Length: 148
Image 1 (cartoon, rainbow, N blue to C red):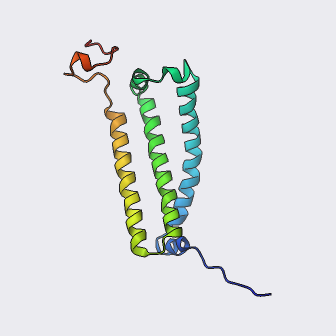
Image 2 (image 1 turned 90 degrees about the vertical axis):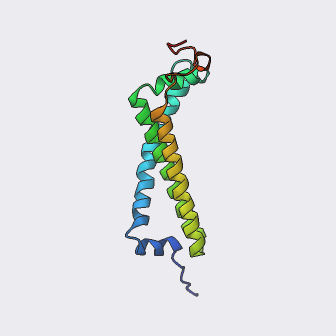
Image 3 (image 1 turned 120 degrees about the vertical axis):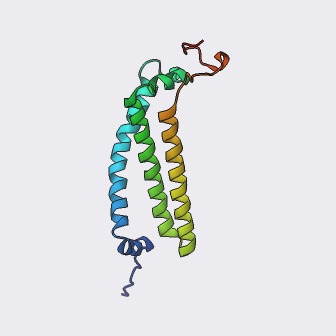
């Protein structure tokens, strides 16, 4: 019977050199996964089951929901956790399957940039959303705005 040595995955070598980034990434994935389950099922419950269900989701529904700081924080927390969770998962895949160090750095850099851009844009949309902007033409405003 012969015994073979199995090579450690490339991400294991990266972990030793980078102050336990892999360990903290692993812990983040478990913690954010649990919190995301609560956030996503709460989101689905409120949007699809309470009230008139999916038929009620329109611009006015979103405007009313985002008028509350509670729902703004809920949706932004869900956005941040989901994007960082997904980016961390992709980072792990890149570390495991991309053997060229330069290509690995480029791909991880692209992941970081795309996650930052999406998180920034999504956060801005949620916190700056105004369904009735001042100075807008009355024809451009939704029917529930007081200027109409």
